[in-house]
Amino acid sequence: MTGLKLGGVADGIVHATRGLSTGTWSRARGFERHGSLPASDVVARLSDAPAVGPVLDRVIGSITTTNLWPIGDDRLLATVGNEVFRSTDRGRSWRLVHRLPESSGPMGVLPTAVCRHDGRVYLAEYPLDGEAAKVLVSEDGRRWSTFVRRSDVRHFHGVFHDPYSDSLWGTTGDTDDESAIGRFVDGEFRAVGTGSQTWRAVELAFTPDSILWGMDCAYAPRIEVLRLPRDEIPPADETPANPPVPEVVGTVDAPVFYAKTVRGDGTTWVVISTASTTGPDSTGPETAGTGGQPVRVVAASRRSGYERWYQLVAVDRAVTLGRVTPRIPTANAYAFLGTTPDGTLLINPYNTRRNDGDVLARRPESFTEAPRSSTGAGDVA
Image (tube, rainbow, N blue to C red; front, top):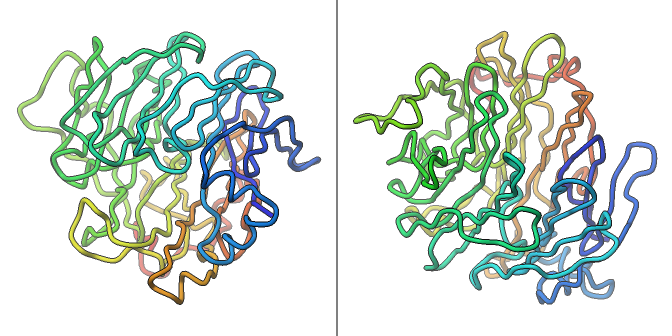
């Protein structure tokens, strides 16, 4: 059976998908189905088919095919392939509202692609082959227009509301020149830093005094976790001659995709998760992916300057026929993250050998009980 995939959390309600089914999750009741996405994407429909899905899981692994976000009131937004759907009744029924670029992947965009900011909804498209990179904007998720269009980057990885500065941030990739972290100012994307894999990030974690991220790069000699103090971020209306230099606060052994900030245990925690990716990076040198590395979730607190990292979860990618037969493609493995209003961290391993499709709930008070690596402070490999 297709595992549960964590969606967005709003007003204490955890939204999730299982294949093309949409619904909510709670610790008491598990997954409760509300409706189903009427997607036409072939990969998604095959993965969701009772007779075919389990076979695909054994051969190539569980493919991520859906995203789900609450966008205000009873409205939800979802993507499958190059289709964007909207619901106004908490996921019981869905209507197609937008088509993404044809080269979009099985789940259309990354889970970090949707953000609510100043009463509007933003959507970062994720083309993989030649189309312009765009961020769209909508008042309610029904009609969309282009907010920012760039031809000098491959795609946007995500858009993010910074609750401490009330600004809208974005991340782009994937080559050195295409990788950037920046803000949207006066209808433009203005990079704070760019020009190397240091600035290639998927999700940003915002804290009162800094912004943190991990490098989304499988081939770098060292995959770093970085911190940029807010007092070193240039004003939004200035373009500095030299970008600020973020501080390295840790290293990991696989690319970082997701990041969350959690308040608890009397301090602020940053949590990041790595991905077990497969195959070479098409925008980098001919190197293999990181399929041999586990998916890891690690956390560090403001007390240590985000330099002492605790490992919360480490799970291997699922065993499939593709792992022993090189000609057969294999799916990546992830740990999707969410937070609840009471400060609980939600960890959702996906396509993993253990806890696949589960939602693991952890309180910050328990983070320091987690085992640390023996390789030294700041190193969580």
